[in-house]
Length: 442
Image (spheres, rainbow, N blue to C red):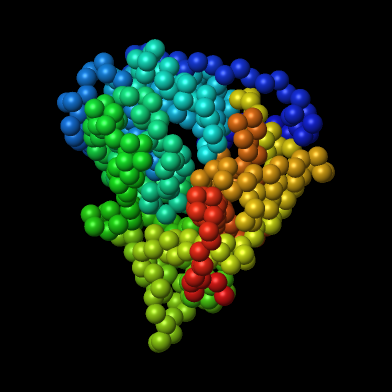
């Protein structure tokens, strides 16, 4: 899937007229039926099944908030099928409206900027449940999982649930990640997909619980490990390209600690610096291959464990003051729904002070502090353009495509998340505790 792009100067983009935010539109029965019909083909291919858990507690005409884990493009097709004929609006990333705003509104989509404070969104959601009597589908993780485990949820989610005062339904998918993991360049695998649709929170439970308690329950509900699920259920991914692009996730060698020299090719992940390689098995395990001596130990057999170790490494770099990203980037801007505008080149810097983006012959200078967001909108092969890091605010988003060698997108997201946690702890507890470095920093 591609997106409409137009080359303009930075000044031309700044002078574009601002678009008016439209009220959400309740999708009619024809649209709901059409979405379900269009979804049937792919769901048949994956032998899709689902089960309802406690859903008899939800009234047929009762609006609810539907929270769904986000694995791949098949998610919306699953929702359109399991929720039919219930009307629902969909919280959607704003770049999804580019070139097709009218269609997206008819479907019931509500635009928002990922990981950016959006008070207008809260008003739109209240309008949906109170005025339109429509349910809301939201992917609270906001971005696809890189390693197949849950990504952080926003602290504001519990407060939103208390504001809306409607039941919460949770949709958990199984196999959607294994079929189409983000790192694999949209290449589909032959994997069965299923889902659970569960009545998760009643209005009475919401009213008596604090926002913090609701957040804790949601975090538990969104705890998952897709590779562990694959292993425990004996799901085989037999396609030989299953490890291609895996270096985007596992970018750091656990043996020689070199970054950006991992290569995922066919079913093998290799380090070009120390020549060690692992094979990703059909069942989702990592097995050592070439480059291992008699005294070498296998560092990781489970992809999420490797990714978790990379997070620890990034945290150690931040604590020691060694972390810094400084790369040349191509810059695109999003200011309306007509196109994404290619405005030139620049440099993106990320360190303990946050992000700084400079470019467009010195005309562009944007600063984003660490506490601006709890995570980072970053993506692989974004609309078939390339790997991307997005920063910005409610008015303008800057899509940065690194032009340097090596994989940096996953590390930058990890750094943004860990930096947010560090700065938030410092804000809540000014007294700084001593830090202990791990063995990730050479």
